[in-house]
Length: 212
Image (cartoon, rainbow, N blue to C red; front, side, top):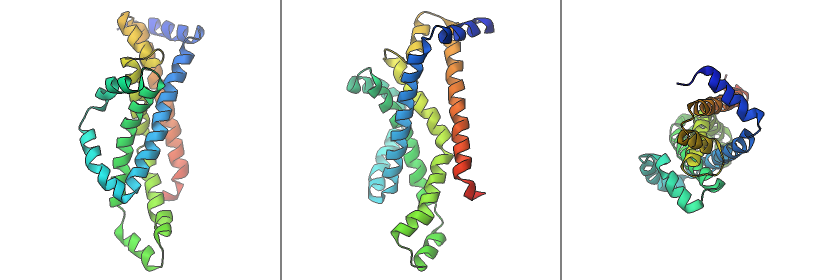
């Protein structure tokens, strides 16, 4: 383990020299792109009954595969640019959100659905009053996990093949046996992910005040 002072110096040099910013932007772009697209498409697929039933076996099979092992395949398909990192983040997030919504819809209190129908509520009323709030709660409840998955996909994709990004810097530090730089990058990733955890926790509390 490198001395804490060496890790602090490596972290200071990254920011003092300004070399870290293009790598931070690359990793954040890939992670947030995969997070947004994976959340939207995963939830949409699970909300559509026919599509959800058709995709469920595929998602179960995909969930059995270590999805980070798909990184080399995505690099072949999409190249070493941003696309392969977004794709890996997307697949990690989409599977999580799909199962969150798919399972959650089936756990909705059937008595509540029957009461809305009895009072004359149609599909729109059910979506607005029952399924909509529940789906938002399920997604927000798993958003912290999804953020972690998104950054995992981005960093692993950059570690496999990239020209910039925090994963690329980790690969460089490993190849040069620079333990201080590696620890500095790990702490940097942890710090930013914890910051996003705090933001998602605040968002969850703001949007789900009605549950209290």
